[in-house]
Image (tube, rainbow, N blue to C red; front, side, top):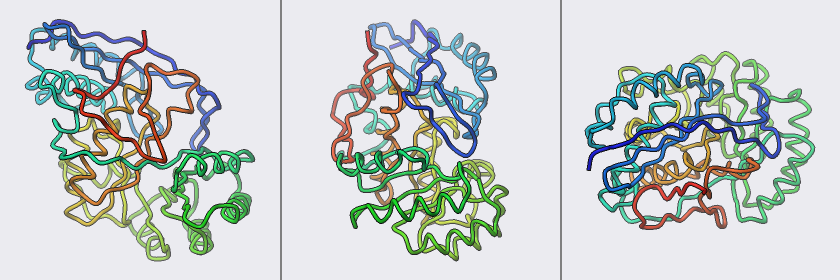
Length: 350
């Protein structure tokens, strides 16, 4: 059925506790909820939430791009409209593509993961996002372990490196033996600082370290990966290793896949396939989207897990908001289990 309406609704979602990383401090998340309606009244939803610190366009760049694209959708069919979306603002394109895919999957009475090519569903494993390594991080870690998470993600680079190492050592001494830490430095350190730290982290239960270098060069990252007993990962630096939509040889063992930075779920899934062929691990991660953005990321993660080695994905961020656009995916024992209902599962709050 054809599209009869396409609309943007701006939103502001305040954080219950400010979100802190090496690149800044956020008190709220802003974006647009996209709603596309067909002749039968079915609606497809998407979240266009630019975050320049992660590598997307700005809010002011996204809005005119979205306005221009929405005007072309009236009277179109969702499937060809989705295929014909132009490149441009990646977060805006991701939100619009998601809305079209949501509507398309509802029209075909399929859950989104099936539309994307996923097979029989299995629970999607999730890491806990416990924020910056501050004085409250220990309490958040204890709560996450009690909730069934086995991998805890921490933001580093917010304090002097010696201070954070001491805090990490203290935190690790309090964790159960099966729990590991996923660290994200957001390009905080110089090469010699990162090398010295990695040698000490090798003796701790570290699962991965993302973006350690302030000036990431292939040579520097390769040298650090050779030192580390765990995976290093590219996140913000990943786009420079993608040319003509093809993944280039990487100096590390893992990539962080953020559809909002890649232009959508379909480009992200293509990248996962290319990484699988190169024996590179992939983790799909939120860019602090609303629940309208998290639901499709869970479906993407389920599809990716069927394509390559299942990962523990970074999607447990909704609890950082004081309120949301809808009910987020339910996480039980560090897992999300998707149902068979058509679409993404997102339901807009009245």
